[in-house]
Length: 194
Image 1 (cartoon, rainbow, N blue to C red):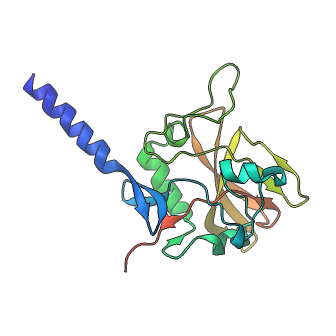
Image 2 (cartoon, helix red, strand yellow):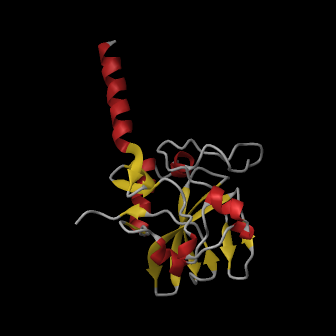
C-alpha cells in the first residue's frame, strides 16, 4: 500500500511540475515542460488581424486571425512567436500521437462521425478551433480546425503553421505558400531570460 501511495504522489508531483497555470506579464499563461505559453489565442486588434467572418464575437471566443507578417510583430513585450522547434518540443512533451487530444480544449470542437472532436486539455493549453482566413476575405473550418503560426520560414516565401483538427488526436506541421495569403491564430511563447 505504501508503494502505491508513493507512486501516486510522484505521478501527481510530476504532473504538477509539467503543467502550471498563472499569469506572466499580465498574460494568462501555462507552463508545459520547460516552456511557458499563452493559455489562449492572441486577440489584439492593435496588431492587425481579423475576426472569423468579421464577427467580433468570434474574436472573443477564438482570438484573432493574422497574416504571418502581422504574427511576426504581434506578441507583446516578453513574448514571441514560437519556432517549429518550440512547437515540436510542445508536441513531443504531450506525446506526438496524442498531442492534439491532450492540448485541445474540452469544448467547442465539432463532432467527427458521431465521435467528439474535443480534447482533454491535460495541460491547460486549451487549443480552440478558430479556423483560418484567406487573402480574399473568405474563412473556413471554424469548429473543426485550429491553426497557429510558427516563426519558421523556408526560402523566404514558404512559412510554417501548426494544426490540430476535430478528426484526430495528432498535432502536425503544415507549410503555407505565401504567409500573407492565409490568416491563422497566434500562440506566443515566453521569451527566455538572458
